[in-house]
Image (cartoon, rainbow, N blue to C red; front, side, top):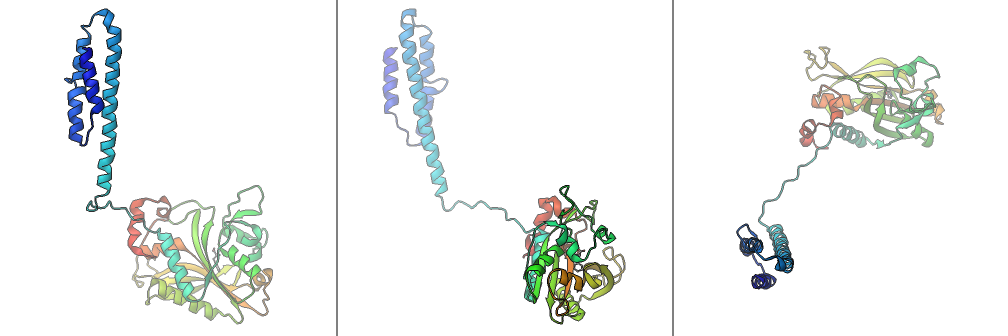
Length: 339
Ligand code: PHE
C-alpha cells in the first residue's frame, strides 16, 4: 500500500494541466468517488493496527497534495478563461442603461436658457435664510398678516432662522451687493409648511427674476414675460395680467398663459382658457432703498414662478408628488426631452 501511495504522490507532483479536460481527467482518476484515493481509503480499513499510524499519516498527506494540486490548476485555468473572454473583441457589449434628467431640471434649464438669451445671468443663494432676506427687506412688516401667505418653516427656536419660502431672498442679496444695472434670475428650492396634496408640496422649486436699471417700466416687464411665454409654450401663446398684491412689488400682477384648449374648456384650465403661472410687478421703492439702491434714480421689475407648475403644463403631469417619488418608470419617460 505504501508503494501505491508513493507512486500516486510522484505522479501528482509531476502533474500539469493545460486544459480543463486534463484537469477533469485528473479529478476522475484520483479524487472522484471511484477514484484511486477513495480506493486507498477503503484498503486502509483492512490495514493491521500497528501500521495504521504511519499509513494513515501518509494517506492524509497524499489527500492534501491531490486536493491542492487540483485547486491550483482549477484557479489557474479559470482566470485564464476569464482573460480570454475579456480579450474577445467580438463579444457583444453589455448595454449600460442611460439615466435621464428629472423633469424639474429639464424645465429649470429651459427657463434659464430663455432668460439667458435675453441677457439675464443666474444667481443662487442659501436655502437656510434669515428673516431680513426672506421678509423684512422685502417690505413684509413684522406681524403683518402678509407673512401668513407663506407658511414658513422655522428650524430652530430662533425665529430669525427660516427655510426660504421664495427665492426673492436671493434678489435681496444681489441688490445689497450690486449696483444697477441688474438683470438676473434666481432658480432654487423653496420650502413652505403646506399639507402635501396633488397640487401642493412642502418643497418645490422656483425661478424668480429681477431687472433693475434706469427707466425700467411695466411695459418692459410685460414684453419680457410675453417673450418668455412664447419661447416656453409656443408662438401662439398669449398672456394676461391680472392685478394682485405682493408686499415687495407695486403695482403687482398675476400672469396667466392661454391654455392649449384655446378656451374650449378642459380639465387643466377648468374651462377658463387661462392658466395662472407666475407673480410679478414693479419692485417697490422701499425694497430698493432697503437694499441700498437709490429708488429715485432706479426702478425695476421682478417676477417669480413655480417650476413644478410650469412642468405640469409642459409635460401634462397631474400630481406634484410624482416629482419627489423618484419612481424610475416615471423618470425614464423624460429621456427624450433633452436639456
Ligand atoms: N416671491 C413671490 C412668491 O414666491 C413671487 C413673486 C416674485 C411675485 C417677484 C412678484 C414678484 O410667491
